[in-house]
Amino acid sequence: MPPTKNSKNSLSRLKPKIVKEMFRRFAEANPTPLSELNHTNSYTLLVAVVLSAQATDVGVNKATKELFKTAKTPKQMVALGETRLREMIKTIGLYRNKAKNVVALSEQLIANHNGKVPQDRDALEKFPGVGRKTANVVLNVAFGEPTIAVDTHIFRVGNRTGLAPGKTPLDVETALEQTVPDVFKLHAHHWLILHGRYVCKARKPDCENCLIMDLCTFEGKSV
Image (cartoon, rainbow, N blue to C red; front, side, top):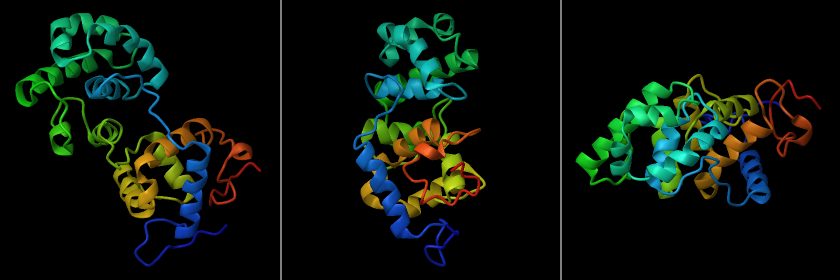
């Protein structure tokens, strides 16, 4: 299928009806997708997402299984302390810096937000270790906002399929915000992550088992 502009201002190579059909299929296959990061509240979600930078969800979940039994609030995390936290997450990449950030953001939550995770992107991005992607995940998963956090999987899927081409994660996020129909935006983040993680994989996309293979513009399809 040749790339097609939605309109003269479109940031997608696909027609709106094709995009709608993509997400209709995702929704039919998985109506209520969930984050694969284990968490019990908005705080543990924030911590888990910070820990997940340059790490797998599986690896983070192994580390937080015991951590969140001990520290599931900012006060408990501060009481745990950076040294003990490092020991509990040392199987995760960059664990020293992450431990420092988690304790620092916990202190800031207590000092500036009464220990509660704010439902505000600017406030979230002021915390150590929290960038736009992390803030978007928290806003989406914890607060039900239709934000789209562009990680490596979504960046790849957006570019490879023609859904949302872009040179940077922000480019892809902007394209997705414009392109994804409003009715699908709440879950778009998870559908695209799961698709990139398990089907549209980096080295060898599983085109044979792809729900949207016939809609995708990828020239290297394996079937």
